[in-house]
Each structure stands twice: as structure tokens, then as C-alpha cells.
Image (cartoon, rainbow, N blue to C red; front, side):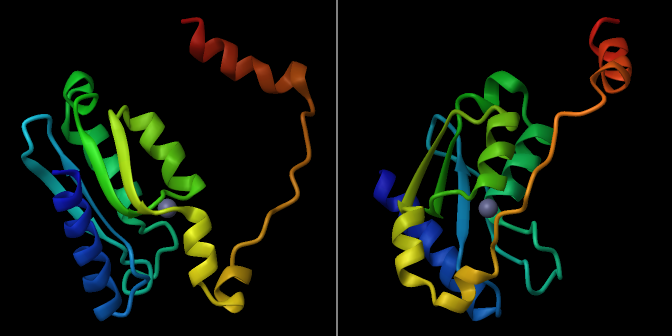
Length: 142
Ligand SMILES: [Zn+2]
């Protein structure tokens, strides 16, 4: 059963590539095996670097599903979710993720130019704790 849904995710990845987008596809499946939603990458056609299928499905689930329903779902995806999507999936409360290609396998298949488009950014902080904590404390302690 897992392989059937993974093959659908791979078919969606091929659809994305055929449309000129990066080749990634995902679907969200309920506990009874019902396909709840499908997405494919549209980052080129939408001009949106965040238009990954996993992120779109996580946003959909957080908007449309009760938290206990989301916890019973499984995301099947053609490739291991990136850091951005993993964060969104964790916040959306989805139950589990099953993927075909690992991130490491993807890196091995990508060109050097494509890999160079993603770079780490320097992070500086923490700073101004006494000022920055005021709105945070007011929000979380109400
Ligand atoms: Zn992603």
C-alpha cells in the first residue's frame, strides 16, 4: 500500500517536471487509505520559492483538518522533505511522512549548479533579550 501511494507521488513529480517545475510531488492520505489532497512543485510556474508540495499540503492540513484528524494522516512524497517543509509539517501536526528518495540520494542526482542555488546563511544572535522578550511574554502569558 505504501508503494502505491509512493508511486503516485513519483507520478506527480513527473507531472511537475513536464510542466517545467522541479520534479517533486506529494499526497496526503487518511487512516482509511483515502487520498485527501495531492500537490506538486510549482515553484517555477508560480514564481514562488516556497511552492513545494509538502509545504502546500502542510498548510492545507493545518487550515482544513482538525488536529486529531491531521495526526492520523500520512504524507507520501517523492523525496525526503527539505528543512522548510519539515518545519511546516511538524507545525501542521501530520502523523507521519513516507518518502521515496532521501535528501542524500537527491543530492547525488542533482547537478552542481542546482545544488549551489541553496546556500547556508550566517545567523547572528541572540541580542536585546530584555526588549525582545516583552511582546513574547505578553503573548504567551495572557
Ligand atoms: Zn521543501
